[in-house]
Image (cartoon, rainbow, N blue to C red; front, side, top):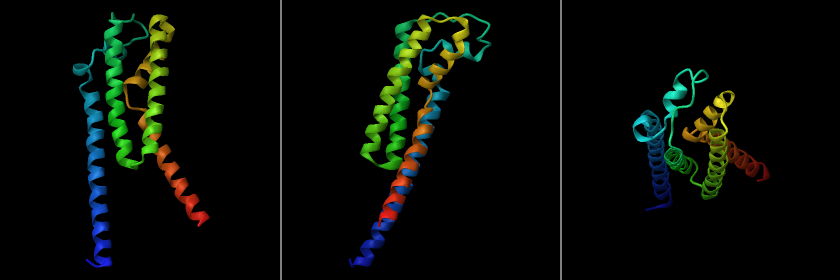
Length: 165
């Protein structure tokens, strides 16, 4: 195969690879949606119904702390693994993956610590704080920050390398 034919073959291979990555990213986003859609069936979380009601007027529902924390952790890990898959497919960069994993780990440790503190020391005026900390732990909000941040990072690196050349 001559150089031109080999180059065309590589371009076609890259195009197919990009299309497959896009399809896989869409599948992973659908998995995140499925986790949310089936949350009541998959996870023990007595706060789902509580926060859907007029929670500022009521009392906290009864809950089993170890079971709640285990399910919260499982859901966070599941969402994190799916989110890391999306980040990997989008950027294919090990450094970005390592950094993302570290950020998710720190987020979990800080978030779960605050969640436990709020549960143990909760008063009615802190229900909203509990709501948002729990929400940050159980929903894949962090990926909405990381994807544009890494995209901008990649864009700025490519612009800097072009201006140096």
